[in-house]
Length: 406
Image 1 (cartoon, helix red, strand yellow):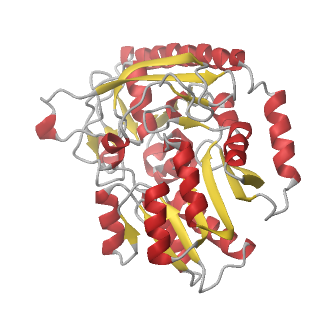
Image 2 (spheres, rainbow, N blue to C red):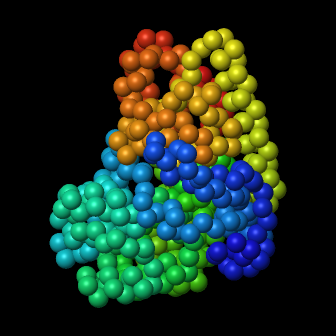
């Protein structure tokens, strides 16, 4: 992609190159291990014109999302968080039985079920057919489609306008930002609200969370560029919150200009971004150097453990783990297996690195000496779940934002 996907200017400067990798959520079935995997460059750039951070190489969305293995309900923390989001939106915007809430990228319907508790009308839009089937079997109304201008016309004709459109961990996936916003303008009621939760670029930098970079995440959002996108389409950010979920996110409320009153949270956070240097290329070049330091630290830690004759496995098979394993060059010769709760991933192998994924009960069966925590953004939840493993002497290696053993 030679032009910025937000402003269209050809001023995107690459600052991070994570190599050519397999798609992070395309876990490999045993019978397909002999087949060659498609790989794509994984590189990130900074737009000198509008300061948006984005991938510099494109992967077709259909290759990423037609079949998808991430399930929101696998994390108790995330379920509680999403149900809390539904409570907030319904209460704040006084939604009732006649209001339609549409969740774009609804996954397995966790957020939709949260809204259903309040008696509002619900509708999901989900491009991954396997996930849409999970929701439909649970009785949730879900349309299999990609959201944009054309699909929004159909959705409005069939369902009427939406009082609220939500996206959680979906906005970074969108390669066609202007088409998406035109779709929002088409489908959203005049006084409706667009609610977005996405990883926050400041947190990514401060926590060295380079493993958030994978092909699905086309954009890495700060508030400034987001506000510029919305303004182009007649919308404005009326409020924003920073959230601790994952490794740090923002929750953004946007409405048409003049509909809502803008909170001081918006101007304050945008001023903080400028102070943090998020409008300067040098800030991101420093981040790239810090990622190299992390690689050296983890290589040394695993080498010491293996030299002592100790065993190392991993826990959690999120997409971010695929990025870390690939860039750090960690395969089954160093990590015997990965334990993960998701039945969709168990029995498969990690993309590119081909480490087997097993059920979490293996930790207690094998009692390995160390567990590399790939899902480090849920460290507290996972270590609580694995209290018995730790009580028997097991230890976790947390790789980000710095390598430490607990």
